[in-house]
Length: 80
Figure 1: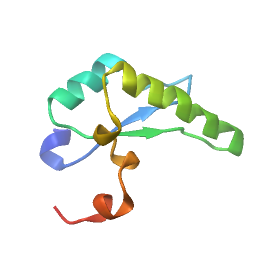
Figure 2: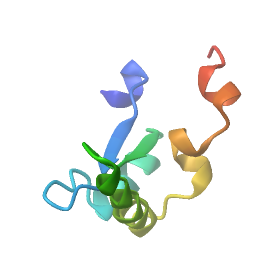
Figure 3: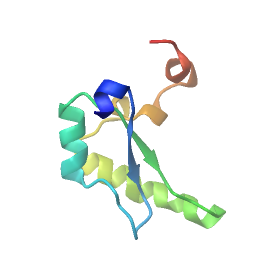
Figure 4: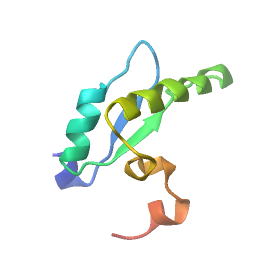
């Protein structure tokens, strides 16, 4: 459904959540679904959660090119 709707899936770096596992990231990428890495930060300290988010994405074999918010802004905003 995410692919059909053009929606990216979130790899949440908050240790209490970790919504997508590495396996789910791999499944999403195989299906052609983009992912985004996020911190779920509600304070500056929470920005450190990005490390865990990126590590989870990498466990799913995601490369920077697979992560929507690792792309240049112009590419993100370009019409499809």
